[in-house]
Figure 1: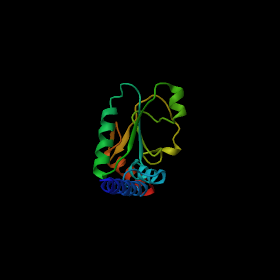
Figure 2: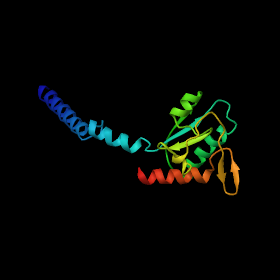
Figure 3: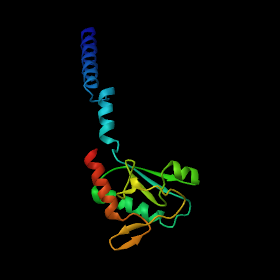
Figure 4: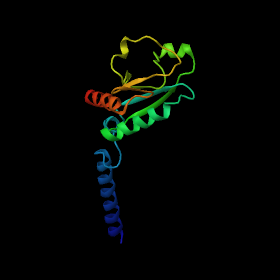
Length: 151
């Protein structure tokens, strides 16, 4: 009987060693290095900021366009909404008006780096031959493509 108990104990020890080996190989848990790799793979490399002031009539359209653009480009992004509520904050954030959309810190509309009229005001965008109160879907998609290529 004692021999059977010893054999069973050895079998359990061998099973535990295999379990430890699998754990060390990352089957049961990730090493710190592997966790960092997985985090880089699953953390969105694109950050979208939607800057608005309270009661902006075009904020909802901007949000919808951002979500539609992400779906169309099959991208994942961290979306951050920024409430701009004072002229001082508008100047600090280089806020060109509401709504503004930035992808990885860059405004979705080209040429804005030369502008300096910051404040709590409505913003307009060129959408083909007409003006729109939120960034056009095509402009956001192009900004996402550019950001995705750089990620």
